[in-house]
Image 1 (cartoon, rainbow, N blue to C red):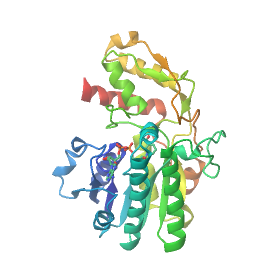
Image 2 (cartoon, helix red, strand yellow; image 1 turned 120 degrees about the vertical axis):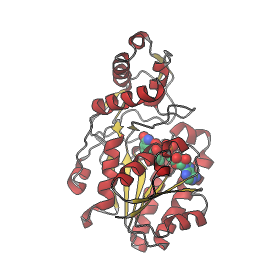
Image 3 (cartoon, protein in one colour; image 1 turned 45 degrees about the vertical axis):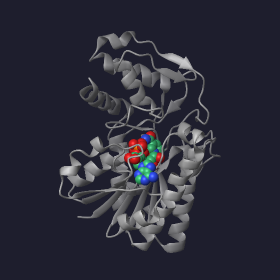
Image 4 (tube, rainbow, N blue to C red; image 1 turned 135 degrees about the horizontal axis):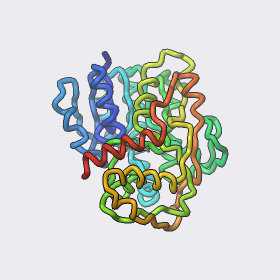
Length: 322
Ligand code: NAD
């Protein structure tokens, strides 16, 4: 059994990773400053003898060193997500996503962590129009957030070459599922629409709704982290992987399916109108991953399609929010 540090462990993806690895019998330390994460995501974990919460900020190098001490693996999730947040406040996004990332890499190197697996992002594909997205073909970043996530990959590559630390980056594609925060100005589109529909409020789609995304259910992301952490294939390390389903759904189709699933609980939701607003700055028109590399090198096989994941997510939100 391993000692695993999960940064951002109070957030959506991090808390799901904590759950999975505690259930597998590992010892988990969660480092989080609750900037966007929540204590209620950790409620059950805090009762577990193998779970330790370390409240702290990755912008503090000493905190990162302390957190990495004695760890076998780091799953680095802590960052400020959201393209619009980074457009509104690029300095803070950079301080956390780049400065904090570098602190974590240095700490992992200094404490001889076995492997550093980190949350990269599909935003790194930027203005590249080629579909499906393959790991080696990227464009120019379209937002400050995308710059920070690309810089993470550059640092990880240089640290692997320079210091021999093992790194794997997972380029997450629009992750959704249980515990994704529906509240706040920077909420992701699926939980935001869920909560609005449950309140019989009209969600607004930015643009015509023809933009498409490779929406990826949380269980597929957990699987990728587990495979990246544990792979003994030497060809599979010191690189990046698309973490996705390999399919794409338009925002219109996503909204339609959400209404259909939620209407099973509350028929009035069928009548709620979808509205349309201006396109958002920094948004990529279309996104669909090739998952061939993850399949070949990590043995990845997505357990959930978009539709099966959405159904589970909707059931979870209904239980929580009804
Ligand atoms: P989240 O906001 O739910 O989780 C991020 C966590 O990091 C939060 O718990 C937050 O409190 C913590 N954090 C933020 N700043 C911190 C700091 N300075 N020190 C310590 N902790 C800090 O977001 P998420 O969706 O779970 O995202 C997790 C990771 O995945 C992030 O790195 C994000 O950029 C990346 N990612 C997410 C998606 C997605 O669709 N959700 C897509 C691509 C990449």
